Image (tube, rainbow, N blue to C red; front, top):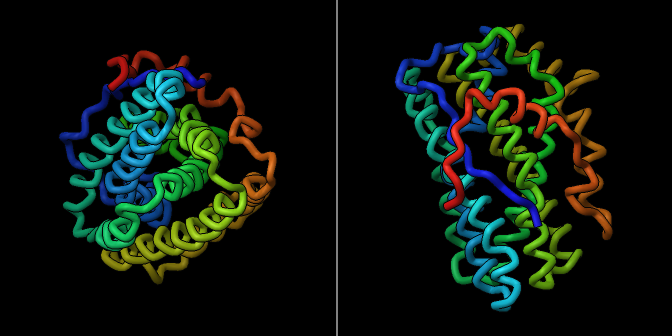
Length: 273
């Protein structure tokens, strides 16, 4: 069982966010903005999946996982809230969130299905966010030129995603979820997640008027496919998910706990929900 603390990030998101807030880099800004656009609806789904998974457990196991689920839900709720505020700021630049309506339609198809499906989808997405979090925490220099409040936002979110990455996975296993279905959902989530992220990033760049600039494509190639690029460095950890004996804890590091300890002045503990 993982002890999960709910924290409030003490930053101001009432003031406007610059159009190219990520070091003046149009691609990185559009990429991060796309991810943020997916968080409110995605994190609500994750919370509901884990809550429903808890209800499906036998009573004695419900008590064992209740505190962890409360911590998971509390962390995801704070992420959803703060990214909704961030999204309201970037919408002022004329960006249109095309990802969220598509996601809502797809997720509606899962209503009334076996709760293990939603947990498998959540576990797969949590693996993606954990890989992204580890990449962010090991490459914090990408945000060195950003406003401190926005750098804190993304690294805090990354640290907490790494912290609660085991919850949905373990609940899926507790409910007897099969390895075969875990693999199937990871393949589907991979295709959908990457397609939607790139599609929304292109949409953001098009609205920004920077889609066809050489600097945009150069940045995309470097940060996604370069030697230290996201897709290149996370491929092997992503692939490990398909092993029968995989567990998220096998890919642990101390980057998350170290960031949370070193930046405690930016955080306020609010307990569990």
